[in-house]
Each structure stands twice: as structure tokens, then as C-alpha cells.
Length: 196
Image (cartoon, rainbow, N blue to C red; front, side):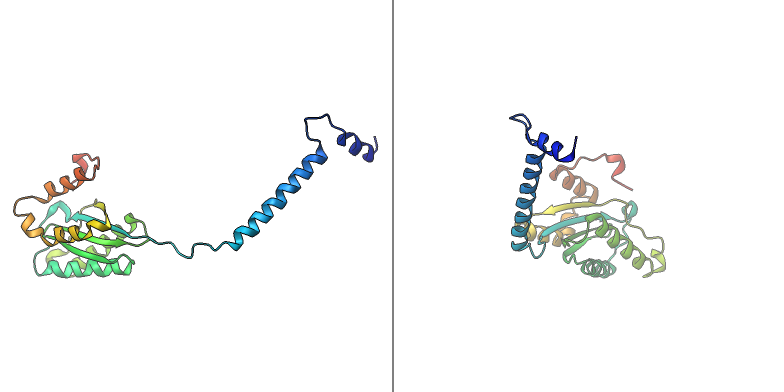
């Protein structure tokens, strides 16, 4: 059958089923619609930037909760932690704690994952602490950490909480405090793997 006859017989397909010519016409119409929609979308302005405001209350201890962060050295450690966070575009809002642990309230960068921020903060500060005194050459932070989101409406309360660590820990151990945070935030945990 000649090619022209094939085209003619395909154009006479039974009613209810689109023939090849109709299918091509529909496809072409869809493509034209898609092109028009794409051109219209290009005219819409894309969002110029990603905006976030994420506050994190970060808590971690020294390895085995050894009381190595004594005053006035503790304030120097806190200042160093703030510098590392600022370099990660995650400015510290408040840093405090006791000789065996730290509390850090900071605004999380939109460009970094929490795990990466914590890893950098702990690794960098641990290396620095080891250089500050021969007695600290074996210094380590605990392996884990607690990171808890803070509503913008609760930032001031978190600042006050961190400010009053010494008063708070006259009655409560770090471990009890940490358990309370986990319970308050509904974090499931296995006691066997929380401490090191």
C-alpha cells in the first residue's frame, strides 16, 4: 500500500478512538500550551532568597561529665564556641553551662545541617581546648548532643534559663536536667546509649 493511502486509511479511524493524525494534533496543542505556560512562568519573579529564623538550644557535656570547664577558663571556652558559630553563619545568642556541660542558644544558618554545625563546633573547640593547658591534652566532648528547637516567643526564656545555670544546678544534676529536656520535647531515648 502506498504511503499516501496509509495516511488516508489512518485518518478514517472508527469514531470514539482518536486516530494518529488527531493524536499528533493533540500532542502539538499540549506542547503549545506547555510553551505558553512556561513563558508565563518565566515572567513571574522567582523568590529572590530563602529566609529562615531557626533557634536551637544545643546541649552537650564533657566526656564522662568530667568537671574540666572551671572558671575563668569556662568563659574563654564559651567565647571560642561563639566564634566558631559566628564563622558558620549561626550566631550564638547565649552560651552558658557548668564545669561539665554547655548550653548554647544560637540562630541556625539556612546553609548548614545541625549535625554539621555541631560536629564543627565540637571538633574545633576540642582541638583548641587541648592546646590551652597540659592538663587538658586528653580533653573530649561527649559523643552525642541534644538539639532542641526554640520558638521565637521563647528565646528570652531560653536566655534566662542558660543565664541561671549555676542556680539551677544547685538542686539538679546535668543528667536529670538532660532527661527533663528529652521528656519535655518527647524525644525517645535508650538510657544505655545517652551517656559516655
